[in-house]
Length: 201
Image (tube, rainbow, N blue to C red; front, side):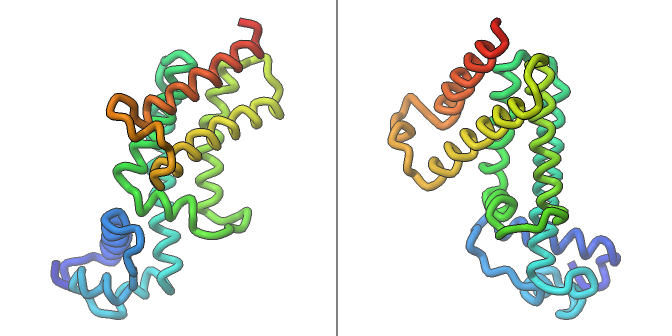
């Protein structure tokens, strides 16, 4: 697209989309504003009207990822699935996002320590709150401290399995008849059983 084909707001979106595309193709890709400007056919200085530097651009990529992932989580939250299936659906949304957006995924969760008021961190916390609220609805007798522990345990379990799988550490996944979803499903079943025992059901 030629440089005069972009409206002001469209260029910002195009920069985020192109950076995301490059990172998903190669998470170690060396992103630069000038390089993106060449790719998009705009002047070298045009991206700086939207981002002061590469860090701001990468933050925007990470924030968009949190928003996309949040929308997927809300769709699961609005379903009428039973507890085990709902938790597995949350986990599948997590796995699907990693599969479809590996570079964006790693940027969302491995972009350094963020301040408490950082938009990317706050968006991630809002996504985790969706999971927390769903578990609370299925465990009405649990207090907030217990629900927080359960939510963190589920999140840590799925994230851990996901990251270890991505690094080819889990030997069980080398079997032809067993994949990461099978492993996550077993973990969800174990956690669900524990949750139900807590409720006395």
